[in-house]
Length: 169
Length: 196
Image 1 (cartoon, chains in turn blue, orange):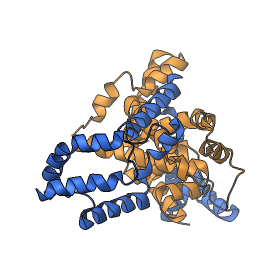
Image 2 (cartoon, rainbow over the protein chains, first blue to last red):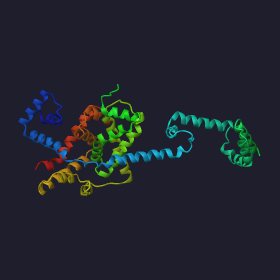
Image 3 (tube, chains in turn purple, cyan):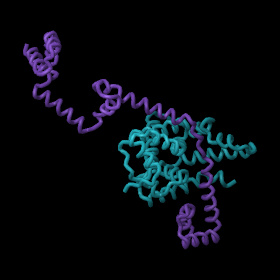
Image 4 (cartoon, rainbow over the protein chains, first blue to last red):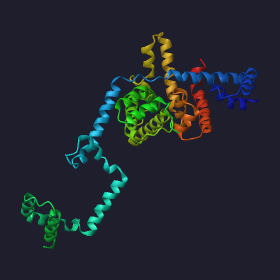
Protein backbone atom coordinates (compact mmCIF):
# COMPACT_ATOMS: atom_id res chain seq x y z
CA UNK A 1 0.00 0.00 0.00
CA UNK A 2 1.24 3.49 -0.83
CA UNK A 3 0.53 6.77 1.04
CA UNK A 4 -2.10 7.90 -1.50
CA UNK A 5 -4.10 4.74 -1.00
CA UNK A 6 -3.67 5.05 2.79
CA UNK A 7 -5.05 8.60 2.68
CA UNK A 8 -8.09 7.37 0.77
CA UNK A 9 -8.67 4.63 3.32
CA UNK A 10 -8.09 6.83 6.36
CA UNK A 11 -11.60 8.28 6.52
CA UNK A 12 -13.14 4.85 5.95
CA UNK A 13 -11.03 3.48 8.80
CA UNK A 14 -12.28 6.32 10.98
CA UNK A 15 -15.89 5.42 10.19
CA UNK A 16 -15.16 1.72 10.71
CA UNK A 17 -16.08 0.97 7.10
CA UNK A 18 -13.10 -1.26 6.30
CA UNK A 19 -13.26 -5.04 6.34
CA UNK A 20 -10.76 -7.02 8.44
CA UNK A 21 -8.28 -7.56 5.60
CA UNK A 22 -8.33 -3.88 4.57
CA UNK A 23 -7.99 -2.79 8.19
CA UNK A 24 -4.94 -5.00 8.72
CA UNK A 25 -3.35 -3.72 5.52
CA UNK A 26 -4.04 -0.10 6.50
CA UNK A 27 -2.67 -0.49 10.04
CA UNK A 28 0.39 -2.24 8.65
CA UNK A 29 1.08 0.80 6.47
CA UNK A 30 0.68 3.18 9.44
CA UNK A 31 3.28 1.18 11.41
CA UNK A 32 5.72 1.51 8.59
CA UNK A 33 5.00 5.15 7.62
CA UNK A 34 5.50 7.92 10.19
CA UNK A 35 3.92 10.59 7.99
CA UNK A 36 0.66 8.65 7.46
CA UNK A 37 0.59 7.68 11.14
CA UNK A 38 0.71 11.37 12.17
CA UNK A 39 -1.86 12.34 9.54
CA UNK A 40 -4.17 9.60 10.81
CA UNK A 41 -3.78 10.77 14.38
CA UNK A 42 -4.58 14.35 13.32
CA UNK A 43 -7.62 13.19 11.37
CA UNK A 44 -8.89 11.21 14.31
CA UNK A 45 -8.34 14.10 16.76
CA UNK A 46 -10.09 16.62 14.48
CA UNK A 47 -13.10 14.30 14.20
CA UNK A 48 -13.23 13.95 17.99
CA UNK A 49 -12.81 17.70 18.54
CA UNK A 50 -16.13 18.29 16.77
CA UNK A 51 -17.84 17.09 19.96
CA UNK A 52 -16.80 20.31 21.70
CA UNK A 53 -19.25 22.31 19.59
CA UNK A 54 -22.42 21.76 21.57
CA UNK A 55 -25.63 23.77 21.18
CA UNK A 56 -27.39 25.28 24.21
CA UNK A 57 -30.36 23.46 25.70
CA UNK A 58 -33.76 24.55 24.41
CA UNK A 59 -36.00 26.13 27.02
CA UNK A 60 -39.30 24.63 28.21
CA UNK A 61 -41.20 27.51 26.62
CA UNK A 62 -40.38 26.20 23.13
CA UNK A 63 -43.43 23.94 22.88
CA UNK A 64 -45.85 26.57 24.29
CA UNK A 65 -44.57 29.20 21.91
CA UNK A 66 -44.76 26.72 19.00
CA UNK A 67 -48.36 25.77 19.77
CA UNK A 68 -49.30 29.45 20.09
CA UNK A 69 -47.78 30.10 16.65
CA UNK A 70 -49.66 27.15 15.14
CA UNK A 71 -53.00 28.29 16.58
CA UNK A 72 -52.45 31.89 15.47
CA UNK A 73 -51.60 30.71 11.95
CA UNK A 74 -54.67 28.49 11.81
CA UNK A 75 -56.98 31.28 13.00
CA UNK A 76 -55.53 33.70 10.44
CA UNK A 77 -56.02 31.23 7.58
CA UNK A 78 -59.63 30.61 8.51
CA UNK A 79 -60.65 34.16 9.25
CA UNK A 80 -61.39 35.50 5.72
CA UNK A 81 -63.13 32.49 4.24
CA UNK A 82 -64.88 31.58 7.48
CA UNK A 83 -67.40 34.40 7.02
CA UNK A 84 -68.81 32.89 3.83
CA UNK A 85 -69.69 29.58 5.40
CA UNK A 86 -73.26 29.48 6.71
CA UNK A 87 -73.57 29.86 10.45
CA UNK A 88 -75.92 26.89 10.63
CA UNK A 89 -72.93 24.50 10.42
CA UNK A 90 -71.07 23.46 13.52
CA UNK A 91 -67.75 25.13 14.34
CA UNK A 92 -65.79 22.04 13.21
CA UNK A 93 -67.68 21.69 9.93
CA UNK A 94 -67.16 25.36 9.17
CA UNK A 95 -63.45 24.98 9.92
CA UNK A 96 -63.24 21.94 7.61
CA UNK A 97 -65.22 23.66 4.84
CA UNK A 98 -63.08 26.76 5.05
CA UNK A 99 -60.28 24.82 3.36
CA UNK A 100 -62.35 23.91 0.24
CA UNK A 101 -60.31 26.22 -1.97
CA UNK A 102 -57.19 24.19 -1.21
CA UNK A 103 -58.66 21.22 -3.10
CA UNK A 104 -57.68 21.80 -6.75
CA UNK A 105 -60.72 19.97 -8.16
CA UNK A 106 -63.15 22.12 -6.19
CA UNK A 107 -61.30 25.29 -7.07
CA UNK A 108 -61.33 24.40 -10.77
CA UNK A 109 -64.99 23.41 -10.63
CA UNK A 110 -65.99 26.70 -9.02
CA UNK A 111 -63.97 28.65 -11.60
CA UNK A 112 -65.65 26.68 -14.41
CA UNK A 113 -69.14 27.32 -12.99
CA UNK A 114 -68.33 31.01 -12.67
CA UNK A 115 -67.17 31.21 -16.31
CA UNK A 116 -70.20 29.29 -17.56
CA UNK A 117 -72.48 31.64 -15.62
CA UNK A 118 -70.83 34.66 -17.23
CA UNK A 119 -70.90 33.13 -20.72
CA UNK A 120 -74.54 32.10 -20.54
CA UNK A 121 -75.62 35.41 -19.08
CA UNK A 122 -76.86 33.74 -15.94
CA UNK A 123 -74.79 36.16 -13.94
CA UNK A 124 -74.24 39.82 -14.76
CA UNK A 125 -70.75 40.20 -16.23
CA UNK A 126 -68.62 43.19 -15.38
CA UNK A 127 -69.95 44.99 -18.47
CA UNK A 128 -73.54 44.96 -17.12
CA UNK A 129 -72.72 45.25 -13.47
CA UNK A 130 -73.51 49.00 -13.05
CA UNK A 131 -76.82 48.56 -14.83
CA UNK A 132 -77.60 45.57 -12.70
CA UNK A 133 -76.85 47.51 -9.58
CA UNK A 134 -79.13 50.37 -10.60
CA UNK A 135 -81.79 47.85 -11.56
CA UNK A 136 -81.49 46.18 -8.24
CA UNK A 137 -81.81 49.57 -6.58
CA UNK A 138 -84.96 50.24 -8.64
CA UNK A 139 -86.36 46.89 -7.82
CA UNK A 140 -85.24 46.79 -4.22
CA UNK A 141 -88.73 47.38 -2.94
CA UNK A 142 -90.17 44.68 -5.19
CA UNK A 143 -87.55 42.14 -4.11
CA UNK A 144 -87.99 42.81 -0.44
CA UNK A 145 -91.76 42.54 -0.79
CA UNK A 146 -91.33 39.28 -2.75
CA UNK A 147 -89.14 37.82 -0.05
CA UNK A 148 -91.39 38.97 2.75
CA UNK A 149 -94.36 37.40 0.96
CA UNK A 150 -92.49 34.10 1.14
CA UNK A 151 -92.11 33.67 -2.63
CA UNK A 152 -88.92 31.73 -2.31
CA UNK A 153 -89.76 29.29 -5.09
CA UNK A 154 -88.86 30.97 -8.32
CA UNK A 155 -87.61 34.01 -6.45
CA UNK A 156 -84.27 33.67 -8.22
CA UNK A 157 -86.03 33.79 -11.59
CA UNK A 158 -87.95 36.94 -10.64
CA UNK A 159 -84.79 38.51 -9.37
CA UNK A 160 -82.98 37.74 -12.65
CA UNK A 161 -85.86 39.14 -14.68
CA UNK A 162 -85.72 42.37 -12.69
CA UNK A 163 -81.94 42.59 -13.11
CA UNK A 164 -82.18 41.88 -16.84
CA UNK A 165 -84.90 44.43 -17.26
CA UNK A 166 -82.70 46.92 -15.47
CA UNK A 167 -79.84 46.05 -17.81
CA UNK A 168 -82.05 46.58 -20.87
CA UNK A 169 -83.01 50.04 -19.61
CA UNK B 1 -44.43 -1.02 2.96
CA UNK B 2 -45.84 0.41 6.18
CA UNK B 3 -43.46 0.26 9.10
CA UNK B 4 -45.48 0.75 12.24
CA UNK B 5 -42.57 -0.36 14.42
CA UNK B 6 -41.24 3.21 14.18
CA UNK B 7 -42.63 4.76 17.38
CA UNK B 8 -42.46 8.25 15.93
CA UNK B 9 -44.45 7.16 12.91
CA UNK B 10 -47.08 5.75 15.26
CA UNK B 11 -47.26 9.09 17.06
CA UNK B 12 -47.63 10.85 13.73
CA UNK B 13 -50.47 8.51 12.74
CA UNK B 14 -52.10 9.19 16.12
CA UNK B 15 -51.84 12.91 15.45
CA UNK B 16 -53.20 12.44 11.91
CA UNK B 17 -56.22 10.76 13.48
CA UNK B 18 -56.87 13.89 15.51
CA UNK B 19 -54.93 13.33 18.74
CA UNK B 20 -52.82 16.47 19.21
CA UNK B 21 -50.95 14.96 22.17
CA UNK B 22 -49.18 12.70 19.64
CA UNK B 23 -47.75 15.79 17.98
CA UNK B 24 -46.66 17.34 21.28
CA UNK B 25 -44.92 14.09 22.22
CA UNK B 26 -43.11 14.15 18.88
CA UNK B 27 -41.99 17.73 19.41
CA UNK B 28 -40.70 16.94 22.88
CA UNK B 29 -38.75 13.93 21.58
CA UNK B 30 -37.11 15.73 18.68
CA UNK B 31 -36.99 19.45 19.49
CA UNK B 32 -33.42 19.38 20.83
CA UNK B 33 -32.07 17.42 17.84
CA UNK B 34 -33.79 19.67 15.31
CA UNK B 35 -32.60 22.75 17.17
CA UNK B 36 -29.05 21.37 17.43
CA UNK B 37 -28.91 20.76 13.67
CA UNK B 38 -30.25 24.25 12.95
CA UNK B 39 -27.87 25.83 15.49
CA UNK B 40 -24.79 24.25 13.92
CA UNK B 41 -26.10 24.93 10.42
CA UNK B 42 -27.13 28.56 10.90
CA UNK B 43 -24.62 29.50 13.58
CA UNK B 44 -26.83 31.36 16.04
CA UNK B 45 -29.48 30.63 18.64
CA UNK B 46 -32.23 33.00 17.47
CA UNK B 47 -32.29 31.75 13.87
CA UNK B 48 -31.96 28.15 15.02
CA UNK B 49 -34.96 28.49 17.33
CA UNK B 50 -37.05 30.13 14.59
CA UNK B 51 -36.02 27.44 12.11
CA UNK B 52 -36.85 24.65 14.58
CA UNK B 53 -40.31 26.15 15.12
CA UNK B 54 -40.86 26.42 11.38
CA UNK B 55 -39.88 22.76 10.99
CA UNK B 56 -42.50 21.62 13.48
CA UNK B 57 -45.14 23.90 11.96
CA UNK B 58 -44.45 22.21 8.61
CA UNK B 59 -44.77 18.81 10.28
CA UNK B 60 -48.06 19.92 11.84
CA UNK B 61 -49.45 21.14 8.53
CA UNK B 62 -48.25 18.07 6.62
CA UNK B 63 -49.87 15.60 9.02
CA UNK B 64 -52.90 15.14 6.77
CA UNK B 65 -50.72 13.99 3.89
CA UNK B 66 -48.33 11.93 6.02
CA UNK B 67 -47.76 8.32 5.01
CA UNK B 68 -45.23 5.96 6.57
CA UNK B 69 -42.74 5.63 3.73
CA UNK B 70 -39.41 6.15 5.42
CA UNK B 71 -38.24 6.45 8.99
CA UNK B 72 -39.78 9.48 10.68
CA UNK B 73 -36.38 11.01 11.54
CA UNK B 74 -35.36 10.84 7.88
CA UNK B 75 -38.47 12.79 6.93
CA UNK B 76 -37.97 15.22 9.82
CA UNK B 77 -34.35 15.97 8.94
CA UNK B 78 -35.23 16.40 5.28
CA UNK B 79 -37.65 19.15 6.35
CA UNK B 80 -35.06 20.55 8.78
CA UNK B 81 -32.35 20.73 6.14
CA UNK B 82 -34.67 22.41 3.61
CA UNK B 83 -35.87 24.90 6.20
CA UNK B 84 -32.29 25.79 7.14
CA UNK B 85 -31.41 26.25 3.47
CA UNK B 86 -34.40 28.60 3.09
CA UNK B 87 -33.20 30.55 6.11
CA UNK B 88 -29.77 30.92 4.56
CA UNK B 89 -31.33 32.03 1.26
CA UNK B 90 -33.46 34.62 3.03
CA UNK B 91 -30.44 35.82 4.98
CA UNK B 92 -28.41 36.17 1.79
CA UNK B 93 -31.24 37.98 -0.01
CA UNK B 94 -31.57 40.43 2.86
CA UNK B 95 -27.83 40.95 2.64
CA UNK B 96 -27.23 39.99 6.24
CA UNK B 97 -23.65 38.87 6.40
CA UNK B 98 -22.29 38.21 9.84
CA UNK B 99 -18.58 37.76 9.80
CA UNK B 100 -17.15 34.84 11.68
CA UNK B 101 -15.25 37.19 13.97
CA UNK B 102 -18.44 39.04 14.83
CA UNK B 103 -20.14 35.78 15.53
CA UNK B 104 -17.42 34.61 17.81
CA UNK B 105 -17.71 37.85 19.79
CA UNK B 106 -21.33 37.17 20.57
CA UNK B 107 -21.53 36.02 24.14
CA UNK B 108 -25.06 34.68 23.79
CA UNK B 109 -24.18 32.37 20.96
CA UNK B 110 -20.80 31.37 22.17
CA UNK B 111 -20.61 27.65 22.51
CA UNK B 112 -17.77 28.29 24.92
CA UNK B 113 -20.31 29.65 27.36
CA UNK B 114 -21.75 26.16 27.54
CA UNK B 115 -18.42 24.80 28.65
CA UNK B 116 -18.06 27.53 31.25
CA UNK B 117 -21.49 26.73 32.63
CA UNK B 118 -21.09 23.02 32.90
CA UNK B 119 -17.49 22.64 34.00
CA UNK B 120 -15.10 24.71 35.98
CA UNK B 121 -11.60 24.15 34.59
CA UNK B 122 -8.65 26.52 35.17
CA UNK B 123 -8.87 29.80 33.15
CA UNK B 124 -6.05 28.87 30.77
CA UNK B 125 -7.65 25.57 29.97
CA UNK B 126 -11.03 27.24 29.55
CA UNK B 127 -9.55 29.79 27.18
CA UNK B 128 -7.94 27.03 25.15
CA UNK B 129 -11.19 25.11 25.00
CA UNK B 130 -13.12 28.20 23.89
CA UNK B 131 -10.59 28.78 21.15
CA UNK B 132 -10.99 25.21 20.01
CA UNK B 133 -14.77 25.53 19.96
CA UNK B 134 -14.55 28.70 17.89
CA UNK B 135 -12.12 26.94 15.57
CA UNK B 136 -14.54 24.04 15.13
CA UNK B 137 -17.34 26.49 14.42
CA UNK B 138 -15.25 28.34 11.84
CA UNK B 139 -14.11 25.11 10.26
CA UNK B 140 -17.69 23.83 9.95
CA UNK B 141 -18.94 27.16 8.59
CA UNK B 142 -16.23 27.18 5.97
CA UNK B 143 -17.30 23.81 4.54
CA UNK B 144 -19.45 23.71 1.40
CA UNK B 145 -23.13 23.16 2.24
CA UNK B 146 -23.26 19.48 1.28
CA UNK B 147 -20.14 18.63 3.30
CA UNK B 148 -21.47 20.50 6.31
CA UNK B 149 -24.85 18.74 6.07
CA UNK B 150 -23.18 15.33 5.79
CA UNK B 151 -21.04 16.03 8.87
CA UNK B 152 -24.00 17.29 10.89
CA UNK B 153 -26.11 14.26 10.00
CA UNK B 154 -23.49 11.53 10.27
CA UNK B 155 -21.23 12.86 12.99
CA UNK B 156 -23.59 14.77 15.27
CA UNK B 157 -26.94 13.11 14.64
CA UNK B 158 -25.33 9.69 14.11
CA UNK B 159 -27.60 8.88 11.18
CA UNK B 160 -26.71 6.03 8.84
CA UNK B 161 -25.26 6.60 5.38
CA UNK B 162 -28.56 5.37 3.98
CA UNK B 163 -30.63 7.93 5.90
CA UNK B 164 -28.15 10.71 5.13
CA UNK B 165 -28.26 9.82 1.43
CA UNK B 166 -32.05 9.96 1.47
CA UNK B 167 -32.09 13.33 3.23
CA UNK B 168 -29.50 14.79 0.89
CA UNK B 169 -31.07 13.25 -2.20
CA UNK B 170 -27.96 11.42 -3.36
CA UNK B 171 -26.45 7.93 -3.34
CA UNK B 172 -24.71 6.28 -0.39
CA UNK B 173 -21.50 6.30 -2.41
CA UNK B 174 -21.82 10.05 -2.89
CA UNK B 175 -22.37 10.56 0.85
CA UNK B 176 -19.20 8.59 1.62
CA UNK B 177 -17.26 10.65 -0.88
CA UNK B 178 -18.65 13.94 0.50
CA UNK B 179 -17.77 12.85 4.05
CA UNK B 180 -14.28 11.85 2.99
CA UNK B 181 -13.65 15.35 1.62
CA UNK B 182 -15.27 16.95 4.67
CA UNK B 183 -13.04 15.01 7.07
CA UNK B 184 -9.89 15.96 5.17
CA UNK B 185 -11.00 19.61 5.05
CA UNK B 186 -11.72 19.66 8.77
CA UNK B 187 -8.35 18.08 9.52
CA UNK B 188 -6.62 20.82 7.51
CA UNK B 189 -8.57 23.61 9.18
CA UNK B 190 -8.19 22.28 12.71
CA UNK B 191 -4.57 21.17 12.38
CA UNK B 192 -3.21 24.38 13.94
CA UNK B 193 -5.14 23.77 17.15
CA UNK B 194 -4.48 20.08 17.32
CA UNK B 195 -0.72 20.10 16.85
CA UNK B 196 -0.11 21.66 20.29
